[in-house]
Structures are given as C-alpha cells and as structure tokens.
Image (cartoon, rainbow, N blue to C red; front, side, top):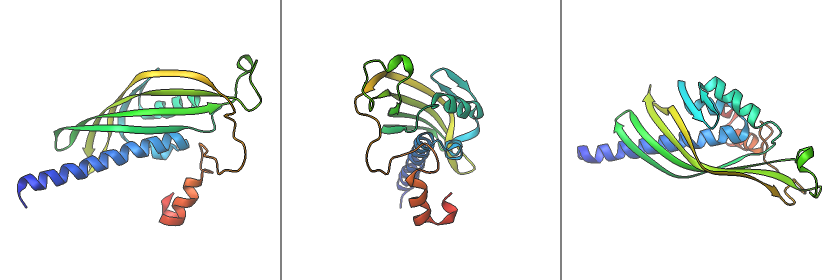
Length: 187
C-alpha cells in the first residue's frame, strides 16, 4: 500500500466519523437527548444558531425553550462536504431540513379543524469547524445558515391511529430497539 492509499483510507475513515457526529447531533435534537447532543461537540465548542450564540450548555437550554410544546422533531441531513485543512481540522458544510408539529395556540385555532396542527419548517446549512481531539472528531464551532423557514397549517397533522409515534424523550422506540440490539450499555 502506498502512502497515498493510506492517506485516502484515513480521509475516508475521517469523513465517516464526521458524518456519524452529524447524525448523532440530529438524533440528539430530535429525541431531546442532551447527552447525545453533547457527544457531537467538544466541551468548549461555540454555536451560532439562529438567535442563540454561545456555549453548549446555553445551546441545550435554548433548544429546550424553542422545542417547548413540540412532541416531535425530524431533521434530515443532506449533502455533507468535508474539506480537510490538516490531519485534525476540517471545514464541514452539511445541508439540513427540519420539521416539527405543535398544537395551534388560541390565536391560531380559528378556522382550523380539531386534527390540524402548526408545522414549523426550516432548511439551511450547518457550517462547522470540526477538530479531532483525543482521536474524536467533534464540532468546535458551528454557524447555522438558514436558507428558508416558515410556519404553516398541517391539515390533519395530529397524531391519529396506531403508532409507534416518535417522541422527543427516552420513550421513543429508538431506545428500546437500540438496547435490544446493543445491550444495556446502549444507553
């Protein structure tokens, strides 16, 4: 194996580790799981996220306020371009789309059917400084760029019928299925 082959294999493994970190971030936000969110960031990371700018403790508190009243969330990650600036530093641009539903507030309920919900949709890009520290690729600094965002009525969007329905807590089916496959250490 040549040195070039070895470098290519290392970069492929690094890209996979960075992608896994992005997926953990999305899972953590969608499940409302603070530990998973934290696992995507270095402890001293900074996040510029809509109207929040600061450390990860503050970001997690900001998420809790902004997800109040929502019992579901879905982030879809799109293309993820990793540009290495060295063996332990990368610029990563990841496209996202997110949606979540909530019951209408009193002022919004006029003219809506009982099963209608309010849908908040957003799409944009995460611009991340990823650093490998102690062998782990994590976000050191994030800038969120919103390309579009709006709120609309989701006709018949209320949960009806058999599930299982996703939840933003540890009652989500993910945790039971994961523990069944990975064992009790799955968390």
